[in-house]
Image (cartoon, rainbow, N blue to C red; front, side):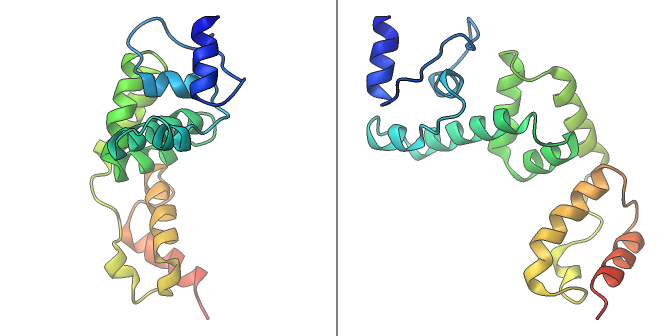
Length: 166
C-alpha cells in the first residue's frame, strides 16, 4: 500500500495497478507502462524525474510496441522495427521478459531477412507521384512487399501509375 501510494504521488495519478507486472527482469520504464497502459507518463518522467532523452525515448518505444501488439499486423510491426533500431532493441527486451511472444518476434525477423531491400526507393518515386505522397506510399509499398501484395518493382510501378493517373 505504501509503495502504491508513493507511486501515485510521484506519477500524479490514482490509477496505479501492479497486477500486470512480471516478477523479474522488468526495468522501471516498462513497469511504469504496465502500471497503467492508458496513461502516458512522458511528461512526468521529463518534468518531475528529469530522465534523460534516451530514457524517454526508451519509454516511448516500449509504449509504442506494447500498445501496437493488438493494433498492427506483423508486417506493420516489421516496418516499424525496420525503421527504428530502438524499437528493435526494445522488442528483444520484451521477448526476454515474456511480454511479447517469441513467435511474433521470429516472424518479424523472417520478414525482414527475406526482404532486405525495398522494391522501390524515394528517389525512384519522385518522377512517378507527387512529392507529398512519397513518404506515405513508401510505407504502404514496403508493408505490401512484406505481405507479398507486391513482388517486383514492375508491379509497384504499375500500381502507382494507375493510382496517380491524371
